[in-house]
Structures are given as structure tokens and as C-alpha cells.
Image 1 (tube, rainbow, N blue to C red):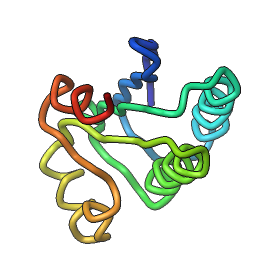
Image 2: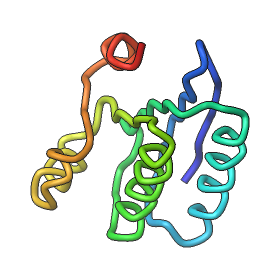
Image 3: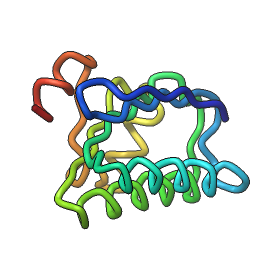
Image 4: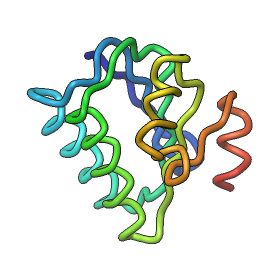
Length: 112
């Protein structure tokens, strides 16, 4: 798994690609998130269009991010999941917990 990050208008933008399967990647993402929360950033857009595969650990990473931000009165939105990831989100009913948009522009508008 690879990820890119940038902060625009006090919103953390993460772009994740590859396989989101937790393991060694989770501590890095959670630590990154904690650093930004400590700077007062509590809104996050996660572009998962490049995620090919996600297992239960990967789902756990997303839930951890969501929980940490909502505990700080923040929010996370997901954008552009692949069909396979979208099916997984529906099967696990996480599509009812996460807000999912097709474009980054829609996600940004929802967080402002």
C-alpha cells in the first residue's frame, strides 16, 4: 500500500493505492492522522480509487480513522471506491457509516 497526503483548506486529503490490508501500514496512517489532529485538523477525505483489495484489517484502519476524527467532532468521507471495494462496503454495511462521494469536489463541498 502507498499513500499520498496533502492538507488543503484545513482538510487532510489522503490518496491510498494498492492493497489496504493493515499490517505494517496501519501504524503509519494512524500516526499521520494523530499528528494532524494535534494540529487541529479534524476533517479528512480518503481517495480509495486506487485500492485494489481490502481485508478486515484494512476496514479496521478506516474505522480507526473515522472514530478518531468523530471523537474530535470531525468527519471522514471516502471518494471513488472501486466496484470491488464498494461491494465490500455494502456487504459490511459500512456504506451506512461512511459518507461516500464520486468526486473530490463533492467531498470538499460536504466538509465545508
